[in-house]
Length: 66
Image (tube, rainbow, N blue to C red; front, side):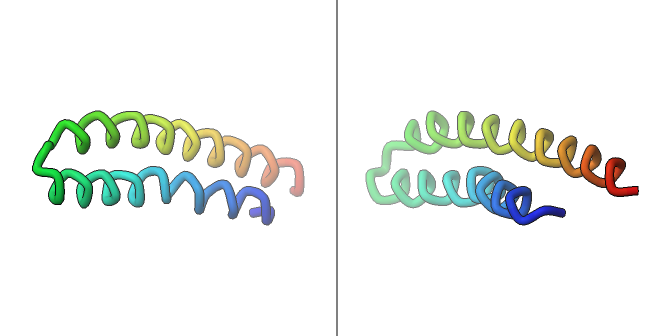
């Protein structure tokens, strides 16, 4: 896996895991749970799309190297 794909994987995993945790903490402090739902869904959609793109690019680079 190339270095740029590793960075992209880290960013997408942060979108999938980090952002929902941030929104969870905000929701716990403000006691308004709409922040959790309105923030987690877009970040999970973006992270999932990025992961699928990264896996597709990784397969493409692996087939070119062989």
